[in-house]
Length: 535
Image 1 (cartoon, rainbow, N blue to C red):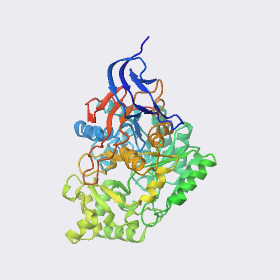
Image 2 (image 1 turned 90 degrees about the horizontal axis):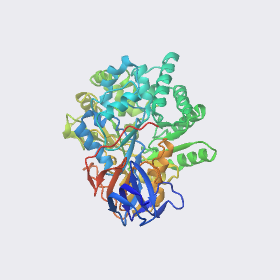
Image 3 (image 1 turned 180 degrees about the vertical axis):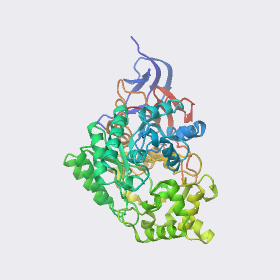
Image 4 (image 1 turned 45 degrees about the vertical axis):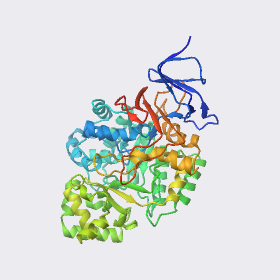
């Protein structure tokens, strides 16, 4: 009997996501009821819709292992949907959110209202906070997405949801409650535990607190995913803390957006990467992710010492309005604070540009140093005034890395690809949200030869799916989920720049999510078959 499919892709080069010796081969791919079937080239088959993809690569849909897209479609369905489409147009069929210690769940019911106000700073709008994973998934089901979403549980969210945004140790009872909330969320389908140990309130936690929570993740066989406590001058010390947490808890370790940033850490990937390789050789389950840019992006408030945010957004606003407190912040940046990363002290205000300030768009694209020079003011005072005017809702781009370090991490055999995209509507977001995956395939794979095609695709697909428990995804095989991207290996390239950050890539022809075409001939179809995935 001749098989019949909903969709049949004929004549392509299948790169199946496994990085096996035969990972790239000529084959036809059939899609039926959201599942895949591999066929010999030209094999008899019928289909409701057939596409000739001769000369193109058919790959598993890309899995963006590091995003902050938790609530973008919940802010405004239409605007948020446009931001999600920027990811889909570059071939991303699954995004993993809840990174860097911040997720939209879980919390004690009595803390939800207070957390909702605090969440605007990080997520860029009124996205809501949810008691658990089920409520989070239901909110997304009401505003369908073009691609899938999986979520980690944020350590900072757990802390805020039980203790509040305060600088003190958790009591034994509070830690027990945090562990119980984490256990419930992981049982419901959350993908692991994340921490952001440079961000408040996560930075207020001891290593022991994180170990206790990571042990809960270990009990579920899910990873501990960490934005290290320092990615700059103390990056090696911070990596050792993460290793300690993994060893004591038993959890697999995944280091988020591994970098050695700031002038005092440039080149240190020559030490951190051999350390990770050595740990793997000893049997430790440790991996990392990376984005292909020398600039990062985060909240402007993260440029201030942790004590400034003790008590939450309202307390921070009061301190920023106080000249004496601003002088204290200035001294902290100049002199450093034990245990604090101090991005500005490691680089300078001339490396910090405004990405999004909704009420002051005239500042976007300018560095804090430029704004200060124009106004004849001190840079800290300019940053403080902008934060107060925006109630803390300001994102920045930090030009803090060097190309050699980025290339070394990209080439590491245990690194996978994550955009670290912060898709807040408006402003000038980092171009990584629209360009990460085509940039790896175009610039670093085709042009520089840093990776071969099979390895690059594996980092974006099969490796990522295995790390985050996405069963049946990240590979092209019989019965796998029908999440696919079809691209031209000879022309795929990123189009997004810092000046025009949402320009779509070239060379991405089709994107299929759950068996439905969400991109065809490089254009959106309007289909929104994405769901929140339980792992």
